Length: 218
Image (cartoon, rainbow, N blue to C red):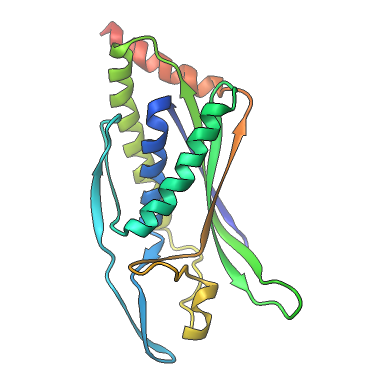
């Protein structure tokens, strides 16, 4: 199986990191989650509904939609908070990457552990810029909102392609495809990882600074 890979890139100021990452990760997971499976007998099941919430950002002119599951939100927030703290404490120029990997398990014979086979990976590259004053921050607030809107449309377009998804499992195999640990939603199995890099993505950060300066000149 070929694992498909998608890369998104955003430039934000430090206070926007958390909201930008939550917006993108939740958007992806919204489209990679189902309601809980309710099995009547092997091969026959119904699927519960997935509730949604509109979330207004505090530091970005942007509203995103997420699954209403508070359990899932806590898991995502914890991962994003750890990434944000690592970014702040790295002493680097402010560049990192957070990845959301979807996988399925393949049972292995004893004594070997199950094999985890990735089928889709989303990598979000983050550049953090320092702004000089409140006027620049207000412009950045608007520009980042516009860029996030573009990224969300991109995510939806990619997900709507007719590409590989794990087939719907039987009751005995559902834990090989879905995370069944949450009581109100059932995302595909996933893991979130991150890494911090040592140098700023100068081309991207320069583009954002140019956008801000051009707006100030109007």
